[in-house]
Image (cartoon, rainbow, N blue to C red; front, side):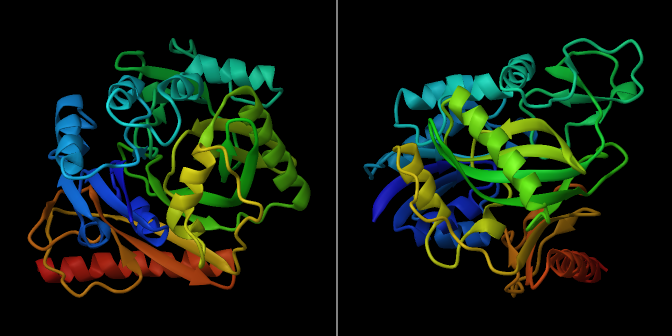
Length: 369
């Protein structure tokens, strides 16, 4: 098998898909979950990653350890780098990046550059400002390069632009994400999913989960796919990416581009084949002749701890992922695990995944009692 480095906040989904694609994954991530270690050829945990994010010294040391006895083909990066393209540049000086370049990340993650890109591509995009709006009603405050929705608050609750904050007008609509492959010039959409939030008082837009298919009309799906194609024609995106939209009837706006494999890998991993292998091939300029077919519906949801937990579960249900090792302390509000569901329809898959989320929390609470 070909050794390959993976760096992400959570490397489990990438590692599992890499194994399916015939790669030996060398993983650096924040968690070191049981199923991540099962899929890994080697693993180094980035301590305090949730609190600190990706730090150059710790990450480069971890990657050096992983690559010491291997000759990795390169490095695939996931969530955790959107706000630090400089770190991707440091990595690229040592290993081949299998994914978007730092320059491409900057082009789609810098708020005003994305707004200009959407204008030039004739794609609707919310009004965006680097300074607080005079009247914050109807506006959101976001952190540049933020992921997972936990960084988004109402503009009225954040009246300064310190710490990389920018402001965006709030728009109505159903959240829809397009997962797509790109080769630097062309894009192929694998499918569309809808997302929902798992809100808290301080994090009203925290990511909760996703379900596919999104239930778009054929015309609506074509319009979103055309928008993705126009973006890729203007910016040389490669590999797996996602585009987040708000859809309201026949109208839509593009909110952001996520220039890396992301949260919907689980629900789009095909029965035969590997999204990871497709990502590597697309980064090399090769898009598949045939796209995967996804029968039925699939959903995934993050289970957040509702109180401090010291994990003790050993026999996890088969429909769970990101399973923490025993005796790991998880603080209230942190991710506990992921739950998955398949069903004939999207509505059924979402109901099932929510029941499973509640069941995992009930089990954790019972063990803590």
